[in-house]
Length: 258
Image 1 (tube, one colour):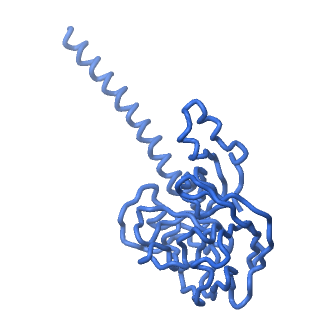
Image 2: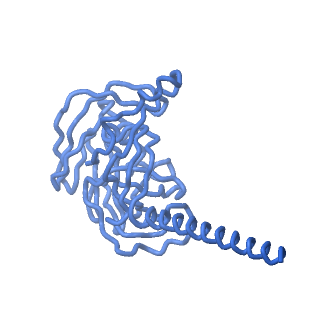
């Protein structure tokens, strides 16, 4: 009799455990699907998109606007490229996250400046698109943080792209090494992307072999950055732990990105 009771108890315990494991698996599956199909959080480790994005910003990237490819997976798996489904072309001015062509395990963030067929050139730091200069208006001064935690004064401008999208940019130098480039024609299924911190960004002005992006294949797109969901000033890490709470940039929590 006691043997029957023990067997029944073990069976009941096994059913409870299997039920709990099934619930955990379902939750993990839902999270995985949501991150793969809807949106995924990312963290900004560099200053290349200042003043729009700061080091320590936590971003939410929407995946559905541009369709899906193997780059959309929430974990990096080296699948062969198969193109995108439900594909759509980004708009000029969109801030996008993508897998760096030089190493697809790395996720980068830049702004779309040129679309397929566009002719892009820089003259004295000003972007020219299809033979027309973008409008640039001085907007005072700002503090550009570097990746080491230091900062320097930068001139701030508001740049307006041909489609009417306006966004701030930083300029650190009068004659930066990437201020003058030859005209580049954006090939099909590619984008020309740039960082808003124009003198501190390895972007489409720099070939992949030199550590830049080159022309970005649209298959590498992960999603569009729509919002900053949190932000913490990493420079405070050198201070006593008791002060770390003051590093939260509350004014940047749940703000939209343009």
